[in-house]
Length: 239
Ligand code: URA
Image (cartoon, rainbow, N blue to C red; front, side):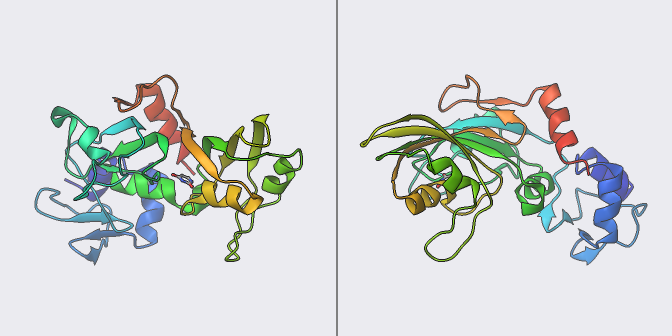
């Protein structure tokens, strides 16, 4: 099979994206940079990678999962149940992994796929995949809170975040509820942003990730992307 056909079959991206990755020497076969998109490859015998991520050809799987609190966003863990453990045996495939991570105590939407290169690209900062979280905190969110988040929060260690959109739903001295939209994915980002404002997050749930919505997906369950969502995914990453 030709390399370009193989990458098309694995849904790596548009023809233009594949050409760009090839020119950037990001496509490797058994550790060697690919020299031609028309070269013949055997994905069963050779290890084909894009941006360091293995290309799986057995058919791409895409699931939206509502992660419960207590479950870890990992492929395996010796102490805790993982998000992959929640996938039924008949829906499993080699290379399934969560795109990005939610903390163990965070609930909400996770995309699970075996399309390594696509997931890797979704996490790349240049794509600014928006994430929306429902947040509860242990103190007040004053009217100036939205401006504080909009100007880009700075953590105590000096790390600067991009501007975020805060909508306050309800606030009191002991408890507030809000929705926040961020375009990046730093470690513990939402919790640290609210801490920088002066309150502690007591409950966190991701309600959307890029073009996908949590909707009424029940906690602990998952579903495959619809055809329309699959198209959205491909459109989202077409440059
Ligand atoms: N920000 C956090 O602090 N935790 C998460 O799980 C996700 C975003």
